[in-house]
Length: 568
Image 1 (cartoon, rainbow, N blue to C red):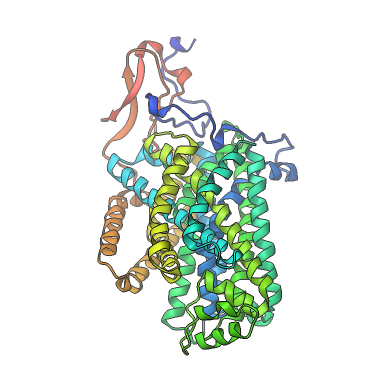
Image 2 (image 1 turned 135 degrees about the vertical axis):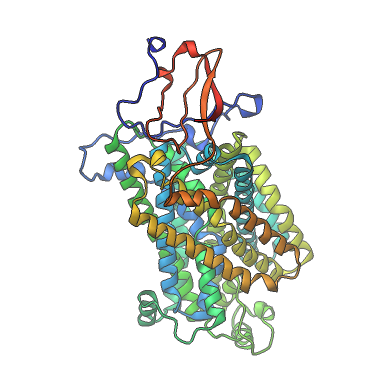
């Protein structure tokens, strides 16, 4: 019996053996239904051989993750980059997507190896103040992303109704679509993943149609895609290049992907199963992000062809002489370059290529906005459960996030104009970029810890690459602060930057663990207490020789295990 044995070392590596402290209480009872309440079984095939059946079983989390690469914020960043620099920044889009794939690979690997998502690991490792700050920043990122979905959906409804549905009306309609997705969620995990795949297909077809009718120059497009240069570019082009990277990599998406991979049944006592899961999830994520890259390329190429160096007067004349002449007044009659956004973008496509192009653009924009609704909800639920050990129902979580997103958006839609709503979308892209280090820093740190990841920890080459990623992210944020924030109308935004900088300072100590010794001052472990027994959890920073125990190995006479601090 377990009570007759003393503490003993595990006979083989036990991946995912860390377990979180029990958190009893009425508010922490798990909800009846969550995304992870249904586990997808992986078919048995011959080890060491590639199997399409297994790849299909692993397909799903990567495509849900890739939706964040296609939200209205990304669409607006793409069309603005095309309008400002034509095809010269396509290579930036390509390598930003590769950079995003590297970050998502680490997120999936953490979830597969440990059996816990990034927010859960942060809860176990970080002290209370840093982890609370991390939670707040991720909630801010999720609400910001939800606001972009609301803005994109409202503009799509306005375009589809020829202006009959006002922007504030479109914002209010987004309340209904959220509950539709909650209803759809009851039909099972695979059906939900299939529906999101359907929305991605709609985006590919609609934006692909715009690409076909715009007929961009293929030679110039290929040069812009594979030759990393930008001849004649200045400050506007550089700012757009930085914006592409900031829009592509969403901070809460890293937390989301590390949780989504837990929806597959993986035997973490078998090293070969973990290796296979990492491989298949990487293949699936590569396919999913390749699709998202092609869709983003369609948008950037279309507006590089249709909008590059276009003046307001030229756009006015094009629309005035088309069947959509009622829209001509949205372009001022001057010779300044058009400051395009997702609303004006749809209008000019309709003026150039016919009304069908406008409505098809609006459908694609609607799909982009709708597809990010539930992923934001899942991300918020995982982040709240992981950081706070607080579980809400899906309905309560949606109500909180959507309320925080709708209130400021509807106020802007009612009391300001469309230009301010599009400007809010740009500001939210900047916010996502500023919050990015709060996701990249923890994932790089934890995936480099051998005590947590065992032989799946980042090697030296991987550490160098991931460190370079972090330096690039910080440089992008510094450039944004210097170039964009001084133009903001209110000094309160600078307080936000100061708060985020203080948060990064609190996290700088774990960053040193990538290359240095792992010597935190205290280590959370489980210490004996009476009444029953619990899993013994060992810190990922455990020194060599310390024992990691399973519940079955914990002597009953030692009593219940509770959280404490190791003093040796």
